[in-house]
Each structure stands twice: as structure tokens, then as C-alpha cells.
Length: 428
Ligand SMILES: *Cc1c(COP(=O)(O)O)cnc(C)c1O
Ligand SMILES: [Zn+2]
Image (cartoon, rainbow, N blue to C red):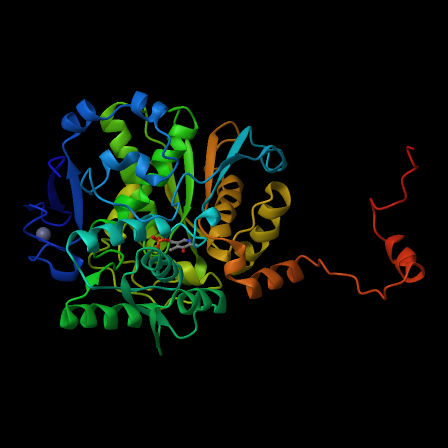
């Protein structure tokens, strides 16, 4: 792994060899989030856009040369990454935009963005010969780790809040993880997981603690730029809980800029739920995220409910350095965004996934973006992850199913009320 120069502390700037430090800067304990720094000159000599043109690896591992793993590392067999970037003409038109793409992370193997990070976690754990790997999660990071571990046969212990959505819990149990339903919040689950990992010596995947998770997540922005022929978009909307996704998206763009593969940095907008808006508050108050107190988080989008975003240093840098911002959306706006996005694009998002799109709608209302920008919205998770919220969302917009007996006589009067379903003349 000579392509890694060092791990750099984002608080004090101290640099560590990856052999010397596993997770955080010892000077700052839990808060000392590290950033992986690469030797771009060396990477550029080994890896180019031409290599990618010839690559048949349509997974996140097509960028292995830019990831913190050995060139010869065996990667998990599940297909992670290279999710579709849909150009959504009708959705764009409805909002008066010239171009809008949706990157659909609901298409990942365990149906959320988190697979990108968990795939790297599994490789790193195996590199160290770890017997057990652990994470705390609101649900998706857990499901991702659980599925990726199942694909390679690695034992894992998962800590989730006891109220995690059923679908995510089902994934964990089906994949055979040891599941701890923690009676408390995600923040409580995180603390317990940290203590258990330290006491039992498990490999720790925790977000905002393990420095390699943002590296996995950055592959989304590498893909976006490659899918757009290295013509970077102007603006990207990302839903934010712990801030690891937005930090990762930013990192990928910085890598590409350093390599000279893109010629400008897109602006990043982070979107948070009003009930979990730590970073929006910090943005508005220009507060230092190292000293700002945790808030009590509670919102419809469980995946972005975080009272103290664990990757807040990277998350704040991502919007500050890129010239973007933080946007707050209400629970009702998030729920409304689920059918709105689905009906004009065919992409079904869970609440946290639709929040990115809700943020775009708000940004347009506030005049933060202009109509001719090339915009990408991430859908970070599949709508099937949280059916209760989806049903609530369609109820809010007044969509109902019809109930009929199995008889044409019953069906006809019902259909006569429905626009667009009138009888067509036979063409034969
Ligand atoms: C985890 C998650 C997010 C937020 O990612 P962070 O890195 O915590 O900011 C957004 N959407 C979904 C569906 C997620 O699972
Ligand atoms: Zn430090």
C-alpha cells in the first residue's frame, strides 16, 4: 500500500503511518477523525482514465488503485457500486431544470449507500486477520455490514436502536448477524458498540471512527464523474446524518481534482431533517463542530437521525470548501418527496433517500441553485427499507387503492371515475 502517504488528523494535523494507528488520532481520542492521504503522483503513474475505459469491473473496485487496500486484496463477491445515474427529464422539467440526474443507491446489494463503506470494512478486517467485526448503526450500515460479512463468512456483532425499521432488522437476522437491539438512540448504540469493540478486540467499522469508511463512500462521486464522461456536475445534493457520505463524496471529488481528471469542484449541499439538524444549525451559527453540543434527534428519516454527527468535521469541510451549504427539510417535505421523486423518475426512496431530493426542491425555492445547473441528487436508500413511511407518504398526498369485487360490473363504475383509463378503440 505504498500509494498511501499517511493518515492525517483533521484536528491537529499530525500524520501517522497506517501501520502505526488503526482508527483515530490518539491526541484527541474519539474525536480525532483521520483522513487518508494518497501519493497522487504514484497513483497517476499506475492508473489512468484509459485504464478505466478498458476495465470490465463494473463495481466500486474499478477504482481500487484509489482505495486504501492492497492491489492484490481479495474483495467481497457481492456487486457493490456502479449504480445507475439516471437522467430524469420529466423530473427536471417539472422543476424547471435543464438537467437533473438521480444516482440510485437503492440498487446496492443490501439496498443502501452503506454497502460501499462496509465492503471496504470487510477487506480491512480480513487484512488484519480479524475474527469478528462490529458496528453501530441506525440500520443501513448494519444491514450492509451484515450482508457483506455473509458473503465472505465473517462473524459480526451489530448494535442498532431497538426501534430500527423492521425491514432492516429482518436483513440482519436473515444474514445471521448477532444483533443487539439497544434500548436507546443510535447515539447510545454507538457508545455501547465502541466499548464492546475495545473490550473484545473486534474490528470496528463505526462511522466517523474508522478512517476508511469515507474512502469506500467516495466511490459514488468517482462513478458520477466517470458516468458523466469526466464532465463534473455543478451541484450535488446529499442527505446527511453522521456526515460520512457527504465527506466521502467530497473526498472522491478532491481525488479526481488532484489527479486532473475533473477541472472544477461541484458544490455540495447537505440536507438534514428539521428534527436532526445539527449540521444545519452549525452552518447557520458558523459554530465550531468540535465544541457544539449534541442535540436530541428525532425525525421520520431514521437513517439520518443523529444527535451528534460522527463525521461532522469532514461533513462541514465538504460544504464549506465546495461553496455549497446545509439545508433543512421538514418531515412532511421528506415524506412528500418520496412519491414526487418516484412518480417522475421511477426511483423509490426511503425517507432519508428522498431527503436529498426534498433539499433540492427547497434550494430551488430559496434561489440557492439556478435552473440551468447540471444537478445530481443522490438517492441513498431503497424505499422498501421503510414501508410504513412510504404508506404514510402516499396517504398524505391522497393516493388510495380502490377496492372491488372480482366482477366487471363492479369494476366499470369505479374505472369511470379514473381519468386516463377510458376504453381504447380496438386496433385489430
Ligand atoms: C446512512 C444514510 C444516510 C446518511 O449518511 P451519513 O454518512 O450518516 O451522513 C442517508 N441516507 C441513507 C439511506 C442512509 O442509510
Ligand atoms: Zn490529532
